[in-house]
Length: 195
Image: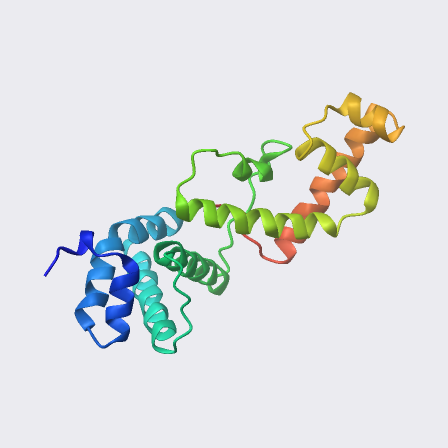
């Protein structure tokens, strides 16, 4: 039999679905370090990490057995997303949602600037960006406009002021209120914007 590193995830998943229990063991062995490290980096507790890791694979097994897994060569990112959701569930259950450190005005956007992301972080980053875009849509129009010009179009407050026809102080004020309102919604809805 080939070593598990040489067999693709798709083949292992397929073998497991055909009744080969060893295929699942190989999948777990193959990805354990990455998934375990990811969970630990969020909860910093070995026992909790172990529990969430076990729950992740229980969910993986259930989904596979129900035939709800859609194979597109994305087994690891899919498992990482399950693990990420279980970490969020863990914090929600224990009322230990991480709060924003309000150190810099644009701190909640720092999660969007990492350019050297690997596959699973990339997937989580996409989810965060999509969550953030939905939240931005809920802002009052003037705040939303300033925030989009500043964060997505990289415009200076002087440029924003000229484009919107308001003073720089007004543009700064709208940006400030946009961030305050975003933080309120994020805390109210218990959304985690970290990857």
